[in-house]
Image (cartoon, rainbow, N blue to C red):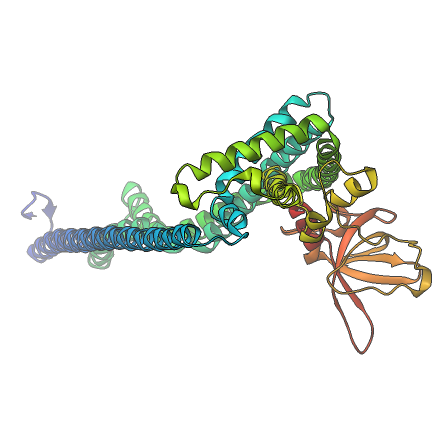
Length: 486
């Protein structure tokens, strides 16, 4: 009997020598596998170190870039502040020169236009005084419906902005989902692939050694065969597992993000009718508040007590303004014609009234109305002096079939047909235009039925007419924007 280095018995010396050779080969393969594993780990560590160093370099570069950008922004802000101060200094110096020139003109002139010159010099301060009086008069009118309607209009506008903000958030979430779907990459699972293939190297060497031993000795049986097949199975599993994991992980991630996107789109579809209703209600309430503001202005202009308050405020403001002038430049109001005083007072009152109207978000009076209006006038002249709300053409207008649709004007039409690409709106009998789905709202509309249905009345603006075919292009979006600004 012959024994090998591990103490196993062999009938011949050649068998023992072959066993010893197989053992040496197995040891060499194991050493090679260990060396390969060590080299792989070393290489992986080196790659990780390089990646960390590259990431650190990028982070340092990014921080340096941010520091430079912050420094440039700070220097730019300082420069803009310096330029702004210089501009203000120049404006102040120019105003001072103009004021001094005006004072010199007033001192050296006996021209009857001195009163008008003083009004021009102190117009802004006088208008502020009258504006304060108008606000006080309006606040004292607690029974007038203007306040309630203005509050309702503000609440409706606030609710509309909140709904619009919700829609914007939903749109941002949908865009984020699209970016996440595009960003799903197999590189996300590169660590799994690297680990699996690193483990395949020593297992491959062991598998080769086992197969060589099977060729040298008898084929394994029993438990040895089971271990050999298990080794083969594990090697194949580690070889193909990364591909399967990548594909399944990608599919699961994309499916999850798609479900999240569908949920956001469903929420946005549910919010669209609410937003449309809030916008329409806001436009209606704003117009009602504007009309109430016009009525309140008419009432103020016809009230004798208000006229008396305006006159006292005007005279007080003039006398207060003249205190900063030299005595030779001042004007004795008793020597000024009453008609000239009334004209100047009316002009400044209407400017202050327009300032109040604009502060309330209402349309201001135009120049013609302010020139024709007088304090204490009768009802007809007071009506002329009030703010005018622009009228828009409506269907079945007095113009009849002869009416022509004009580009840039607002119309209130009736939806006669709804298509997937938009809605057909009848402006005048027999005159129909197309409002494309992109022109219905200022956000993406998935279906035309979400905004309007057949028989609905809605405001539209004519944005174009085809010269050859005569087709009319309408926009509900532009009409709502224009009505909100008025």
